[in-house]
Image 1 (tube, rainbow, N blue to C red):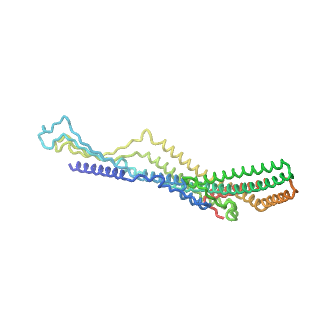
Image 2 (cartoon, rainbow, N blue to C red):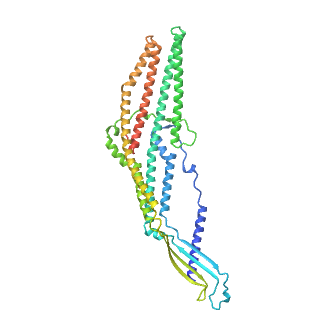
Image 3 (cartoon, helix red, strand yellow):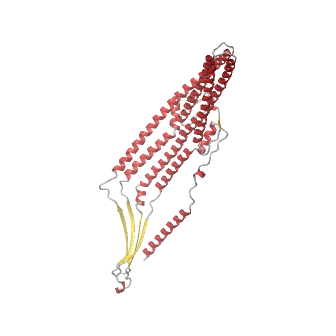
Length: 453
């Protein structure tokens, strides 16, 4: 009777705990809507590069997705750390063909009571080290997820910087087309006045008008490109409403001076990258996860043993159909036909894959640093040449031809050609700056840190 009272009490307590957990789950507040978890983004009237990076790190939607992946890995670690719940059962039955009133001794009854409890293999899972290896693998996976989130900030930050440069240089290109439009309209007015005076032919008038219209077309296309660049930048910054017509800074118009790009060697930058790159550290964490997974797969060959205790009775005393009986049991599968060879092979292949992936990331680090450093230095040489002499001489040539044309010493074709050459040189400078800043930001991405100059 004592065992029955204890078993019934345990079962009642377990049911009460289950009901309490379910009730508390129903009372738990619903998850916050997306608008509450992801704050709206408000762009200032003028966005600088520092503003763009700050807004992206605070409200970038892709970073929120990376955070969600980390939370998932944290939940998997919590699940791997949990102990298996015990199984408790109880029952009541009766013997249909037994009449206890016909029994001449006390304690006869046709009511059967039973109860059992099992650890479902929880004890042996801890003693065999399976739980420890499972936790070790989940912890390595969480570490890899956290590093992947940091690496996402590195790669997505490069995209934000690159798009900011695209917007700033599109603004500069719009300024060039405005200058071209104003110059060509001034030329057209001058030719129109000379044509009215009978000094030039209608062919010159048509050429001047066509050049002015082409300049207007180029200006409209540049304005469209600038707007598209701003909209794309706003998307990367997490703007989820109508994009305002904000302004961007002019920082990309001036290349950086001196600093690590001029003083560093490929070897020093590669060494720095190998210690800074989060994706390389994440690859190492994934390899550690795979190693723990292989050990766990090998340990799973140890059969799961469930420890159980059971209490049964039907009546009491010597005349009871089933006197109070307590039994203890062990239950396990016998690994005769299959010893988890498939799971072990899969885990071993995963470990080999992660080792190769780590080697591949290391090789990628070297290639990224070497390639981006060469591109940055090559673009810097071209922009220095452009700023030191080429732009100045091109503008000087255009101004001289314009004066000569106004004095009648140069033809209209020479003037239009000089104007086109000046605009082409300006567009080339914008493109070189784009190449330069892309290479600089790629180098920062390759090293895994900002290289302030």
